[in-house]
Structures are given as structure tokens and as C-alpha cells.
Image 1 (cartoon, protein in one colour):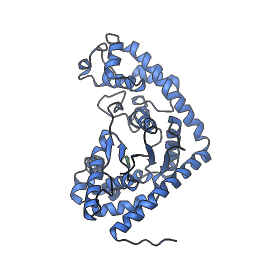
Image 2 (cartoon, protein in one colour):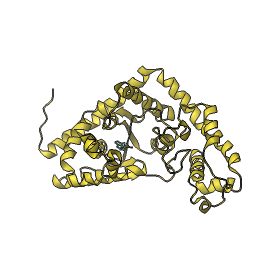
Image 3 (cartoon, rainbow, N blue to C red):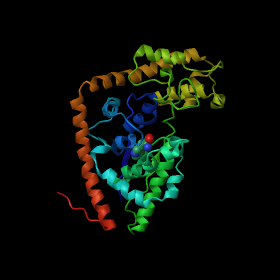
Image 4 (cartoon, rainbow, N blue to C red):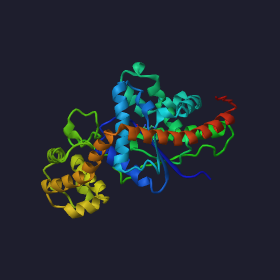
Length: 337
Ligand code: TRP
């Protein structure tokens, strides 16, 4: 039986926010106690749309700093960047040959990202999910924590694994991965619009809490966050069609490791201004220490690069062994130095 192993990837966007923390990184931190975990900064995915080289370099460092500052232990887990392990690109090519064009045409994220100008999107953007499948299967990962929006890409990863195992008569070679999409790790929405995901790319900085925001700014942003005129309900049904209210309650629940109905039974009947001051305290208590640690770590680039390099070497050991097996299964020979 294959060992249980977690793999996940995060794009190096820089300036991570509360949505990234509660939706992904906090989950990564919790998983490190239960699984062997590999966390990859997917710089090769980032370049499917143009990246300014200077910004890319600093965003990669900031992502490592955010991981470590949030409590992912770089000794216990593997934290590395995709470009350091060439096998990701090699396996992605193999999967370009396993996956079918029809499968790629169904990917909704490509359609959304390419928009109307499909002809002008990079070829990389189209085959992005094959690189993602390569990331995961290169380590024979069994569990992948991801957001809802990545579910379809994980389905594709499973299809690729099945087709490979079947085509090359190597039953059970690649595990069929299970997504970890926990309800306790909610999709955090913009503070200005409960229909939109909290995002670095939204114009107003007041739509998000950045991990590096200071106390006063966090307090101001929460005070200004959109709500409605109704008080907090005592039952979850009272949050229907109140997307902004629901969002603030789920942020509170997630920060305190509580269920939504527990929060509602504590605050039901109270108005939002009372709730917001409590929420503000919790956000500050969790985010400010992380933000301060990120700022501190960013001053020590050599520490961050040392960790990235150690992690990359650990990842290479697994990747090289597995890619060698994959080539053998397929009848390919690879001579090396
Ligand atoms: N596509 C993922 C995202 O945008 C990032 C990613 C790349 C990933 N490779 C991965 C996630 C492997 C999980 C596993 O969020």
C-alpha cells in the first residue's frame, strides 16, 4: 500500500491575505501533524500569464516567508519551488501525451481565465492542469487540500492516473488522489462584496485583510466591511441571502475553530457593531503576529533561500526516483551525467 502523502501547490502571488490564510495555509499547518506533507510554490504555473521577473522573484520569497510565519515547519515538511525540480516539467510533457484534447476543452478555469481572447492565451495556460497533475503524481500523493475551484483539476488528475495505469498495464502505479476540501476551511469573500472571492487583484484594498496589515488598518477595514441592517440571527437559516453577513460570521468561526451555529448562538440578536469589534480583535490576534514574522523573515533572504534549497533537494530525491520508474514503465531510457 502506498504511504499517505499530502501535496499542495500555491501560486507565488505575493501579498497574501486572510482568504489565503484561512482557505489554505491554516489547513496546511493542521495537516502537518497527520501526514507527510509537501508544499510547493508553483512558480511554473505562475508564468502561464506574464510575470515581471523582479516581482516574481520577490513574490516567491514572500510566499516562503508566509508559509513559515504561519507555522508550517520547514524541517518537518517539504517546502520547495517547482522550478527547482525539473521532473515536474518532464512529467507534465508525458501527461500532455496522456491527457486528451477533449478533456482539456472541458476545463472551466481555462475558459474563465482565457476569457474572450482564447486565441491569444498562452499554450501553457491551456495545459496548466497537466502540470498540476504532474506535481501531484510525481510524488504519488494520496491527498490534496485545495479550494472548490480546483476540484475539476483534481478530477483530471484522477483521469490521467487511471489512463496511465491502464495504458501501461501498471495497475495501482499512480494512486487515485482524494481532495481534502474541508467545510471548516471556508471560501473567504471580499469585505466589500459577498459575491466575490477575497482577492489580491480587487482594486480596493478595503476588500481584503493582508497578512502584513497592521492593527489599526485591520480595525478600520473591519469597521468598514459591508453588512446589512438586520441583527445577527440565532439560526443559520437567518443568514440566507445575506452573503456579507455570512462571510463575516464564517471568518469569525474559522479563526476560533468554531462551527457557524455555535457563533450564532453566542451572538444571535446582537448587532453588527458589537460583533465587528470582537471579530476585529480575533483577526488582529491571529494575523498581526504572522504579519510581523513575515516582515522579519523577509529581511533575512539567505535564511529563506536556505530553506527553499533544502526543501528542493528533499523533493528532488523523491521526484528522481519516481520519474525513473515512470520512464521505465513507458520504455524510455534516460542517460544522465
Ligand atoms: N492550481 C492551483 C491553484 O491555482 C495551484 C496548484 C498547482 C496546485 N499545482 C498544484 C494545487 C498541485 C494542489 C496540487 O490554486
